[in-house]
Image: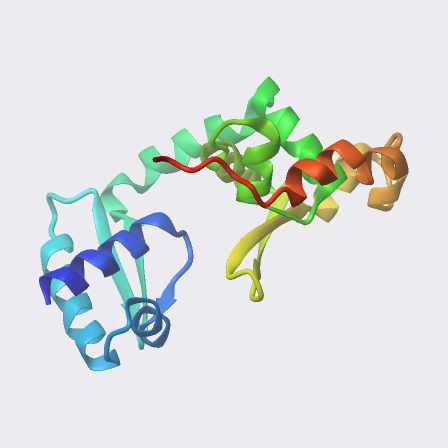
Length: 185
């Protein structure tokens, strides 16, 4: 049970969306009843006054959240983080998504050459990028939002400068289609 609990804890930690018990059972290859027991144990551990993280449950959906006591602190921090100017790295990432989206994180990181997790989170919080689950590839893909277009004063993605040329760049297509990624030996 402790390994299942650990797996569920990790999954709850990395997402900002609630998980159903069924989805957790599918991902962890466990029984739904065992997932329920593990969640109850996690709730007992986390839902104390001295914890900054808590676990909420509604019916068979569960999510890891900030404790109510710290919500103002977190809200103020997020507001400060999302209202400032975009960094150069954020602008690069946003540009790639605008011209190549929808694009998954691995492709984005292959183009930029660095981890983009924090930048993606920031762009998602600002409402400039949205994530959608690509069920075929079983991963998230990212694309620009209508708010992004509205901010730029354009009506569709194809109105971006040099969109046709940059959207079909052969060199980027070669990078993205290359199957031979370096392996650690």
